[in-house]
Amino acid sequence: MSRSFSTKRGNAQLCAAWVVRTAQADLLQPVHDEIVVDKNRFCVFSGNDLKEVLRSEGIKHLVMAGVATSGVILSTFTLAADEDYTITILSDACADPKASLHEELMTNLFPRSARVLTVDQLIASLAVG
Image (tube, rainbow, N blue to C red; front, side, top):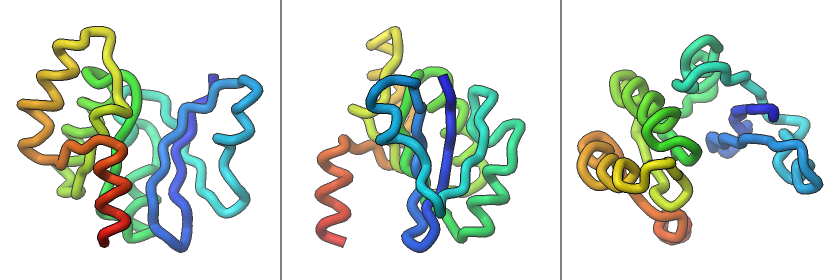
């Protein structure tokens, strides 16, 4: 399994992709103008230059999705909130082995410093804005 995080130049969107070596993996590969930052820890900011990449691109809003809600998402959320990023967490694009913990985080913790939306709600908000 290869994990990569990239920012797309021009439209300043942050994309996070866990690339699994399967027949569909080609769909998730970075394109020629994307920056790839390796992720080696629970928090996507640890052990790499992601903060510097985001700052150099002027990215201040993170949209988060992934596995596991109580690991990667929680660790990244905590540091991103401390760094004053605007955060959106996609509740139906995250998962955790313990469903009740996922629900607790999405309902009671994350909304303190982030917008918690479904993928459909995010898409609808982009169409309006």
